[in-house]
Length: 404
Image (tube, rainbow, N blue to C red; front, side, top):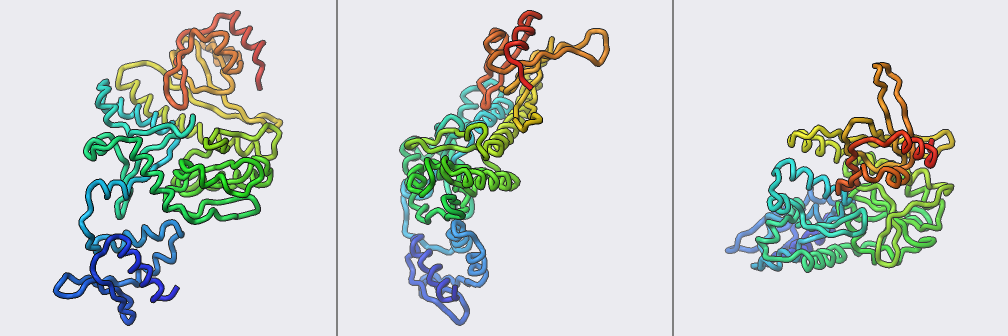
């Protein structure tokens, strides 16, 4: 764009942000002159802002203007309530993140439940695996809205959440980009792309084959295609694998839009895209369990508990099937991840390296020795195991649940 076109964009932005003074364009020096004497006058040089604006993704451009010019704006007085409602936005995260944050608060604050509750971000479920909290957008950054901020504002979560969704919808006027027939990519790249899952109406009208399936591997991008589009599903899964290498990792889980609700979804086994989506799901779960394991080990150590925090392992069979497993060791109290397979391990008592292993599915383990397993309440779920099955139970589970 020309210098004059960018100058008009910058001037329009200043006025939209509440600048009350006259704004004149000085094309010879590529600047704006804001105000006239005897009022204060600002000279806003546009050269660097112009270059940064054109280089930025479309969804980031307004933030470039905010960062460059916010401190120079003289606004009409604004009430605190109006400022809050103008700048609040929803932020979608995987529900496991909130669970890990609570465990971290327990580590930092001890057994003070009131203090722990106060340290948590107020949020609500979007579905069984995603939740949404509030963020407040400042001129140069975004801050999270905690309990203390809501109390200071004298505001309740739910009505403010509705306002936040309305704000995000108002800034989501760009159409999704059709990267291939029936395959769409979010165009915003403003760190709120994944958060637009809170606005299912943005996705319902996309021309996809079947019901919309969304994958948001980072906070900055969402891929969408239809559940009846095999090539489209392969494409977004491939893009998802690449996006997980980016620093703004999110939950690389697929969700299908059913009515107005996103439901966790996988194509059926045998589908060309099943293995890719399953691997993305495992990578997401492994990351969540690793994050959870770190804080649980620190918390158990601080409280003097000798409990092992188990590791989720993933395997691929010769025919390409993928499954997860964990080890339940004899005489070891543990917090085990929920996996496809459970390996019961009896360590040799004679000092040799050889022991015995019985394997079964998680469902059969719950059915046969459920009295030895207690859910921890974490997300993703862990199971506190204490004791060990009898020889008869081990043989029964190994027979009933033969697995790779």
